[in-house]
Amino acid sequence: MQVHAHPDDEASKGAATVARYHAAGVRTVLVTCTGGEEGDILNPAMDSPDVRQNLYEVRMGELERSAAIIGYDEVILLGYRDSGMPESPANSDPRSFAQAPLDEAVGRLVAAIRATRPNVVVTYPQDQSGYPHPDHLRVNEISEVAFDAAGDPDRFPDAGPAWQPQRLCYVRWSTKRMRAMHDKFLELGMESPFTDERLGRLLRAEEAERDGVAPSTPQVVVDVTGFTAVTREALLAHATQVDPTSRHWFGLPPGVADTVYPYEEFEVARDLTESGPSVDELFHGIEPADAEVGSGRG
Ligand SMILES: [Zn+2]
Image (cartoon, rainbow, N blue to C red; front, top):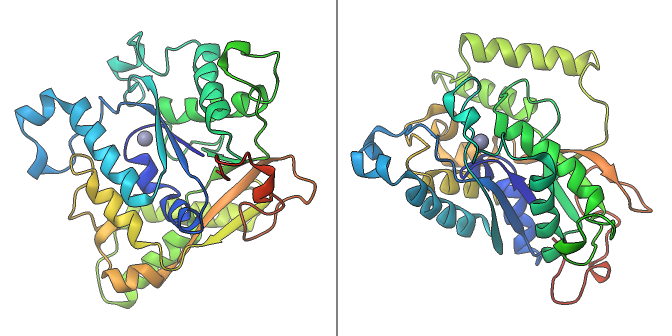
């Protein structure tokens, strides 16, 4: 199970990993917390009054196509409204994810976990300083609490029979991938999307990792060779949100982009398995037999 804030986050984060495990027979579940109603239309070709007026419906259609491309077996909508960027008026909308009582939002995620019985839950890290969107912060908050609460029959007794996932992971925005991409653009004599501010941020992140300032929790690096094209295709399915001329996402020729850094990185936040995590396998120590027949691993 991956928990994401908005339609399109499932495409930009961890998509190739889901595609890989889905192809191997793992049952995959996407939880999308908001409808993305506050998203800017970032693709000029899609900016029409009609699209603006029906943004929720349009984005739900995009989400459905993206999830099918990635290989999600099930999509669960948590049903909250997009809280908008920090300091925007949408933050105070009572229907927004940010305004929802924590317990209520946790309860909805607990119900999703109990209904689909995932062994591994992937969510966002606590540190969202790179992109402090209120909905992304909330995804972390509710996932941390729901991971424990789902397995406790005394909590949210009306949300279905208790189910305890075995591992909670944070999807990481990979510094190594950014570096590999930047270097590849330069090597090919192309203009890199990592200019000025973004390159500065990359350099600071690399420095933090070298100095060990970055969290020293166990890392899982998943080899997604053969599945990287899924990320591009799923992003393109979000036609209103993703500019098809984006150099970051589509600048490198596909054959090059597929091999420049075919890995996705996760941080292990919680591990209840006997074996503990391994460096390259999200499901290490979790046998398919541990999962209920019919529901599969997830
Ligand atoms: Zn988002």
